[in-house]
Amino acid sequence: MSTTHEEVAVGGPDGQVAASLRDLIDARLHMPFPLRLNPHEREAAAGVDTWLRTWGLTADPGVAAMIARTRPARLASFTSPAVDPGILRIVAHQIAYQFVFDDRAEDVGRHSPAGLVPMLCESIAVLRDGRAPSTPLGAALTDLYRQVRERCTPDQAARWAWQSREYVHGLLYEAVAQADPVVLRTGECASIRSLTAGVEPFYPLYEAAAPDEACAAEIHHPAVRRLGRLSADAAVWTADLFSAVKEQRAGEMINLALAYQREHRCSLQAAVVLAIRRINGTVREFERLHAEVGPELSPAGVRYVEGMIGWIGGCYHWSRTVPRYADVTSVPAVAPRHPTPEHDLA
Image 1 (tube, helix red, strand yellow):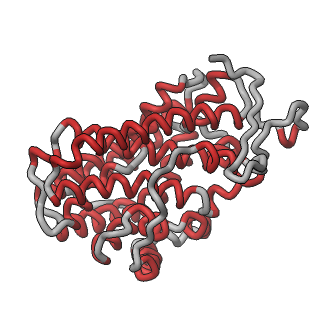
Image 2 (cartoon, one colour; image 1 turned 90 degrees about the vertical axis):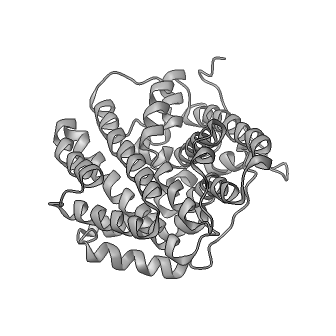
Image 3 (cartoon, one colour; image 1 turned 180 degrees about the horizontal axis):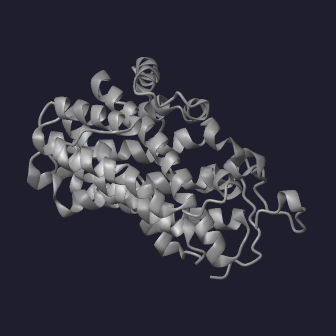
């Protein structure tokens, strides 16, 4: 289907035409998971601020402002509504750390992917070899890994470290793609986005939150592994819808909606609709597979998969309200026929 020059109009439940790009997303996105909040969010927020200061990560005013706009404890609350205060604290610390790490990696990698190598190698050395860190980011990761090992079983901590290493490796792919003038196709962008999503490292924490440990056969069951992949993709692609305006203005490339826009040479609004169709298919596949495998899961397995559900719904509810992505409300739901330069997002 060609979407070149396609215009997008959308009606909400009351029949009125959507006013902003956020309204367009809300009206078209299939989101069956309601908003749920963790009652310990306030304590987690205070803990995040203290933890970031302890390791010097918010000494830079720009980083402190980014954290204020990002609200990591709010994302932890939305994605992890049923976990205990201890697990919520680790989830919030990890979210905050990944936002700081990811933004730093983007800044460095944009100028030179090779310049990113020492930063990534330090993380791999901490996660794989237990080496002492040499930077504040490395020290924060070392402490985060300590928290994980104290709460998780050895197998759970090993899964956390392995999935965290995959996230670190993905940032190098992202830097290479950003630096190369060759335009990425949608499939390649989605592949890189899957690596850099940073969602799957949280799953072992949901294992640890359950009173009973799920067996290895259940954790590694093909259907459960597929649910994990679908959850991570749906969560991060949904965030891409709301961050597309911000990332387009910053010159970023690794975003599902922007990839559709480049490939189809269409307006941002039309590209968002294409991305929504892909996300809706992913969420519906998750629902179908969950309905099939759910009755076979143990109580621990059920809670494990509920953590995956939390990321799909939580990312949506967080993304649509977080100040970091507020630019989504400044763009109309329908692309102008004759856009002025300052509003031309095609």
